[in-house]
Structures are given as C-alpha cells and as structure tokens.
Image 1 (cartoon, one colour):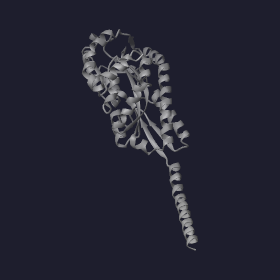
Image 2 (cartoon, helix red, strand yellow; image 1 turned 135 degrees about the vertical axis):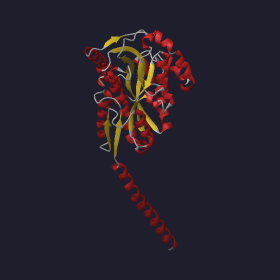
Image 3 (cartoon, rainbow, N blue to C red; image 1 turned 120 degrees about the horizontal axis):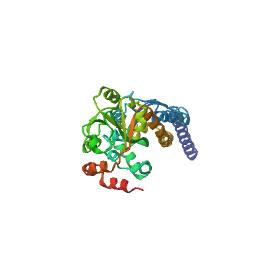
Length: 335
C-alpha cells in the first residue's frame, strides 16, 4: 500500500509540473509573437536624396520580413532635429534610429574621427574596402560605448568645396573665405591650416546663411550640394575630394535590446543591403549631379591637391594620439 501511495504521489507531482510548465510557456511565446514596434528614423538630407529613398525602401522590406511587427517611418531634412540632437536622443532612448555623418558621430564616438582626417583615402574603392573590412566593423562596434548600435555604413560621398567668391585651385585661394563646416574640430583645424575661416553651423541653416552672405561657402558631397539646391546661392565648385564622408546608421541600444534575435538579424541584414544600394546609386548619380550644377551656372575647377595635402600634415600630427596612429597607418596602407 505504501508503495502504491508513493507512486501515486510521484505521478501527481509530475503531472502538476507538466501542467504548470505548459501554462507558463504559452503566454510567453504568444507575447513575443504579438509584440510590435513603431519606430522613427531621422536624417538631415533632402527627401530626394538616395539616403532617404533607400531608408524608405528598407522600411518597407523590414515590415514585410517581420510580418508587420516592425514599422519604420522615415523623417528627412532635419525634421526631427539636427544630427547631434538626434544622436543624443538615441543615446537616451527618445529617438530610435539615426543616419548621421561620421563627422558628427565622432563627437560621441572618438574612433569615428578617423574619417575626419583630410585626404585620407585615395579614392572611393580605397574607402569602401576599409569600411567593409575589419576596421569598419571595429568602428561600428565602438558605438556601443555610447548606448548606440552601429548597424552599417552608408555613404555621403567625397566632400567638395563651393563658394560665391572665386574659383579655388590652390590653398592661397582659400585665404579669407568664410566656409561653413560641421561642428567638428578636425574639420575646422584642417580649413584653418588651408587658410580659410571655418564657421561651424547646423546644415539646416546653411542655405539661408549663404543666401544672406553670412558665409561665403560650404563643403559637401555632390549629392547634398545638388539635392539641396545650393547651386542657387553658390557660383564656384572645386572638386577637392578632401574628405570621404560615410554615413553611420545607428539604432538606440534600448530599442535594439528589446528585439528578439530574429528581428536583430533581419535589421542588420537590411541595413547592409540598402547601404550598398544607396552607395551604388550615388556613384551612378554623380555625373548627373555635375551636369545639373553646370547647367545651373556653376563653374567647376579640378585642383591638384598635392599642395593641399602638404598644408594639412599638422592636423594628422595633432590628432594621431586621439584617433590612434596605428589605425591611421593601417588605412593608409590598405590596398
């Protein structure tokens, strides 16, 4: 009798454990399946820029591949604030996703200042090889120290100079020109070394400031110059290609940590996919941008940058310790 009672009790305990476990697992699985996210992504480029059009395409595929669990609205033209403001919001969880220039990102993630060094890359192929390699991944990983998750590098392109005063073909032509720069000390030091008067300013203020003569010029990739219609207030374009400017697609770590693994994987894959598409679109569009600007009356010069490179060597020396002399050398030696 005792054995029968013991066996009965054991069977009851096992049955109770099975029932309890079954009741606990169903709501948890159901909750994960039903959770949804409505996110906002911001950037400062024009609505017609490939950055914006491809973020929108990425959002469509993201919603499709997550069965509607993740919806992403895209806000161009600084409608959610400047890049610095949006990055600060993503760090504290009041902003979801930011597509920012590496120059502004460098104010939060010092390793990104690597891209601020003038004339660092020989050409686009050189830059893309660095971004797609170990150095690029290390830089994306470094954003976690600021409660951000670096998803992928997109492209802003090589930055070139425009102004309303004169053609710039040698460093001496820059003397006295008031040039808008981003709020970035390396960029400012580089333009000072070249003889210009750098003036930091949010991009949203640039067109009006050029129009009113508060500044003489600015520097940006061709796509930004064209889609922002800066040719309406600038006469001279100098193809200096002084900085290759990647865009950093980042998401708030708070948001990222709320995703299950399958959504994280999908997000990363699509960020890389559409970053490559956006880069290809910019490459194909550059000739059209150039044609448009010359048709609008801009004069174009192609200066020999050898003398410019000599002038900015002091900038490399000043920031080598902060950025890392070893990583600078690795980039310069990448073939």
